[in-house]
Image (tube, rainbow, N blue to C red):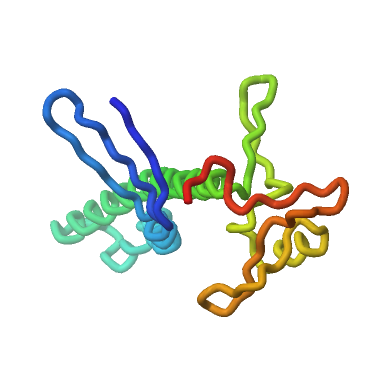
Length: 190
């Protein structure tokens, strides 16, 4: 199956080619939504963890001997509820960790795709990602643009963008030993 990935703002799009059975599909992950779900999920897990650890305290007012049917039933319910909250916590922690890893991987993929990070293949077959020392102008923040301008990597164009901010372009005549910053990530479309 041929999967093609592309980023669209904060959405990761994965398009599946037809599988030979006539079916095809596509799905999108809104990474900002995933990122926003993690903190409330962690808060909910904290509440579940407290119920799990302290469910016995909820039985204290039910009577010490537990001889009536209501007392026995209530204590059994709270015991099982506490056990269930323990399972919710374990599964929720695994889900939260998987969501956090997904967000981190998306952020890394986005940083590589935009040219902020570079992949460095190591001799042992693993990859390391390092900040791009010469990031494209299109992804530089104002501090990076000021530093690149001071180094002679970029120059201000005589125009401004629609917001009235200066436009920077690669320096056509960078100082000796300085490489002009690329306008876009290498291999990026228009």
